[in-house]
Image 1 (cartoon, rainbow, N blue to C red):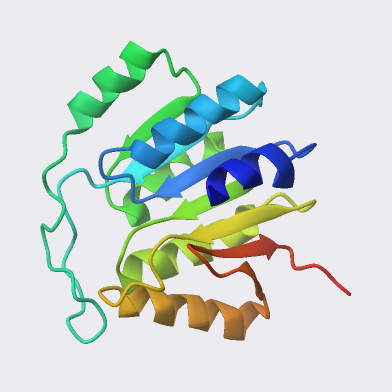
Image 2: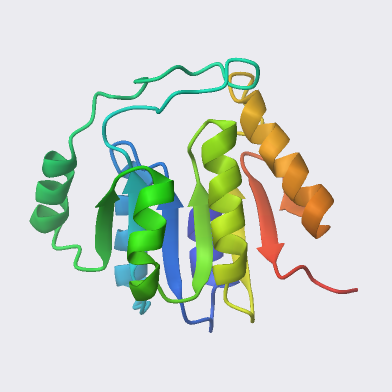
Length: 185
């Protein structure tokens, strides 16, 4: 529901792309691409994932282990995107630290970043790479996992972001939602 409401009302009048960190089987990315198409939105949806499971994790912060979520297929997802005619959805395979630098040239300013990658290092990288890419007129960071007991590293990465940027959540359930740049009151 958060993603739909942001797309329908929060991004209204804003130009830019949507990016998802941690697509797994692309359920959310496919949903966002369908909504964008139905709402007549311009811009692309980029779905980033290793498509081979989690990388090595920090056992002090992350309950997930290497290769968790490996039951996915990049090729099957590409086929699904074609089958649904989602020309606005581009899946990108690889670790975020590899795929973002290689593809940043084609990604427009971001108006929505959906961050669903379950571990500290991945979330921290997503935050640090996306905040400078956010549309200066507004955008949203949506975090899927910080309130899950199995994702303590995600909560720590979000808390680090809060300390660094001063952002405050506009919504806390079922996802933490932050507006970038923050509203000045």
